[in-house]
Length: 453
Image (cartoon, rainbow, N blue to C red; front, top):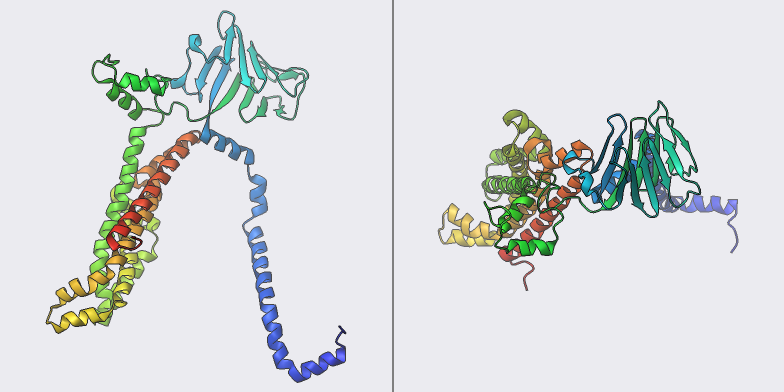
C-alpha cells in the first residue's frame, strides 16, 4: 500500500470535497460525543467536589455499621470512676447479665468482678484480661503481651504494639479484627465481642422464654402445665414474641399494615376518580375541546408535582397521619392514571361503539359495553402496577410523617445504633413489596387472561 501524497489529497478534496466532508463528519461526531461525555464527567467530578467527599469518607465506620446490621456485640465494661463492672448485650441496661450468670467466655476470679480479675476469651486465640486499672492483651501477632494502664490523667502502656493497636495518651483502641475490640480511657475499660445474628430477636433478655430452644418451646406450647396461670403456654409464647420491647414485632407489624392500607386506599381512590375523568379527556368521547383542555391540564398539574411534595403540603395542612399519605398518593396517581386511561380510550376500536350505536343504544350503554371492555385490561394492569409501586412510595411518605413503616424506619435510623432494627424493617419492606408484586401479577393474569396457558 502506498501513501497518498499531499498533491493527491488536494486533488481529491477539490474533486470530491463534499462527499469527503460528509464522511469526515460521520466519523467525527461519535468521537466528539465521547469527548463531550468525558468532559462533562470531569466537570461533574470537580463540581460535586468528589475528591473532598472521598477524603471525608469513613469506610471504617461504614464497615462497622454494616457489621452492626448482621451481628450484635456484648460489652464488658469496667467503670473506673464508679467502681462498677457490667456485662451487657449492646450495652443495654435492660440486657445486663447477673454476675452469677455471666457468659462462659467471661471468667471472674477473686471476691467479685470489680475487685478481682476478669478473664475474657475473645475468640481467635485472643484473650483480654482486666485487673484493677490494667488491660492485658495476648494473642496472635503479639510476641509480648500488650499492657495498658488507665486511671490517671494519661494512659501508659508497654509490650508489642502492632498496627491494629491505636495509641493516644487519652485513648487506646485495640482492634485485632472486626469481632474483637477494646477501648481504654482514663475513666473506663470497655471490651466488645461480636457475634453473628440478631440479639434477643424472639424474646426479651428478661423473658422467661429467653434462650429456650425451638424444640422446648414446641413441647411447652402443648404442655398442660402453665407458666402463667392467666393464659395458655401457646398464648404466652405468642405474647412474649409480640411484645418484645427490643424488636417491637407487634408495632412493626401494625406499621407495615398501615403502609399497605395507605397504598391500597390511595391507589383505589385514584383509579376510580381517574376513570370518569379519562372519558371526559378523550377526544373520541368528549367533543368539547375546552373541557378536554382543562381536564388534561389538571392531569398535568397533579402528576407534575411529586408525591413527596404533595405529602409535605398535606402534612402542613392536615397534620401527621396516614390520611395525608392516602391523599398524596390518590392525587398524584389520579393525574397519571387519568392520562393513561384517556390515551387507552382514544386508541380503542370504534367499530364496537358504532355497532352498538346502530342498534339505538344510548351513550352510557355504548361506553359500558363498547369502551370499557376494551380498556379493562389497561385499567386493571395499570392500577395493580401502581398499587405495587405505591407500597414503596408509602414507605417514603411515611418517613416524612405520614406514619407506617417509614416512620419506624426513621426512628431506628435516628438512634444511630439500632442498625439491626433498620435491617429488620428493610427486610420486611422488601418481603411486602415482593409479595405485592407476586399477588398483583397473579391477579392481573386472572382478570385479564394475559399469560395464562
